[in-house]
Image (tube, rainbow, N blue to C red; front, top):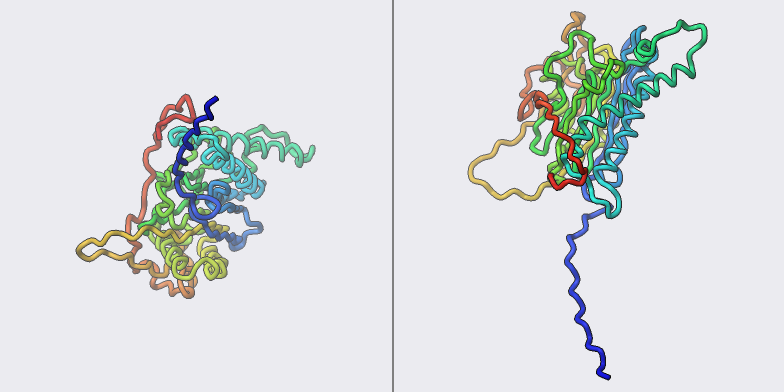
Length: 376
């Protein structure tokens, strides 16, 4: 009997190199601070930030601003519930975007449709259920009987939140406040700014009927780790209202980026409470800022002929009340070695790039029948 013929051993299939560290994507450092408004009896703002921006731990950040008037007597609870529930929904979204193991991730088209439609509806529904449950557990039988809408009105709050994974950057906003992004080229934008500014203190709210229809959504796939936004920040309107113009607020955020790039997060984290306290003195409102930053390292660019324009660091910017005729304090928060004189507030050069970016028209693609479709 002839011996068996040895079978050739197949060559190993080449595998792509594994990313450095536990996952692909930049590691983010985070900052958060909230300051109670002048003459306010309670801080109605609430905020949270968690995660690293990796597939396993997506970066999640959120701020909410309870309305605070007598009509919204429980809004300090409404803002807390809004942030807590956003974090839960954001973790679910992150798990969908970057599934574990061998499970194939859904297409970007499916994820975008989920972000624009399913996410807001689920979040608002969960918030309404939460506040109504809180009312039933804590209200007294002596309190007047209220309709469901009046109960929800007591908890009214805004919300701004974002999720960053190695694959996508998505954000949601209902009501006032700001999502601020500084891209890899140093341009400062506010992607979710409304097409028309709210009048006075009027704003959209989680307590608005069918509030999910009013949620504004930002969607930006991440094509490469170094193309992710450099800093991303969410803030309540107590910060932006402390400036006399939108330009002043954007210069402040550009200066924050400059300071983080020059000094790192720890020195900025140490002085952030002072900056926000100064802003709160101007706006009179609770002031909250959550920011995440990473020092993205792009590949070395090919040399090009001719001079190139370098970004000029934004000078220190001083908030000044736009509508209050009372004299403003001489000092104001600004990313820099220390507070800067208010006289420099509006004369400095703006940061490079557009000063304001209006939101793009929201598209509503038909949901793919299969979340694992091939359309990317």
